[in-house]
Image 1 (cartoon, rainbow, N blue to C red):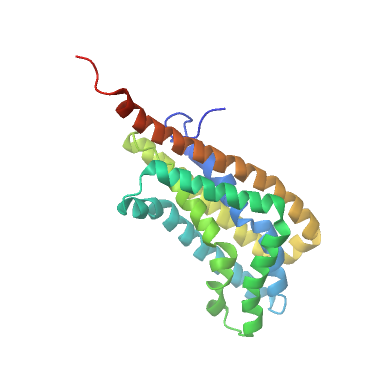
Image 2: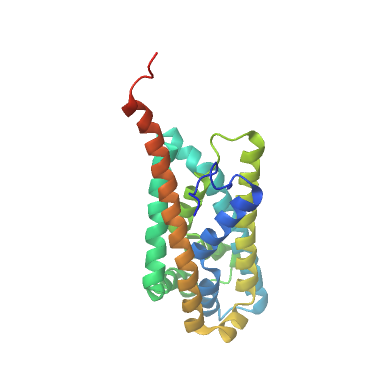
Length: 242
């Protein structure tokens, strides 16, 4: 299996970046499981209000993910954090989050449900007041999702041309847009999702996608180690003979 780097695994291409980003973001956002909780905490609202909430949550989510993808790694680099170190740290975050989802999706559901219950307890009829907090942040796109997005952005092709960099960025952008489109559609029809899947079906699907996310996290760590080792080896070998 090819190592996860833009230079060796062709993730600099649009399709490669999309195939890297979509499974990771979909797994950590988990729109199917979140839709079940969304249906529960918005059950007292009208269908029109739930549809409006779903659209606003999807819009806010895509803004958060795109900012994390495009500016997160640059911000960390500003503080002197190398791309290799960022990949290792980001990969570990992804792997740990995936392991938690794989072992106990019920615990993740309970945490998200507790966050989202702030919306139902507020008793407000103003949709805009709760669309961003807590239904978008941290219920849909929380710290884990933002960390994964930053880790994905760190996989940008640092030694490739401008076209490769643009294709990579566009691929990740399309992945984020598609995930948020799924969020919109599933939240808007959350009552139908509940009837079709139920909690047990959603947990089975969550474990399947968590396994994919775990593999992606491990691969990101490998690519970070590869870059760190590549930078150390020339210094260990000493100056080239004349």
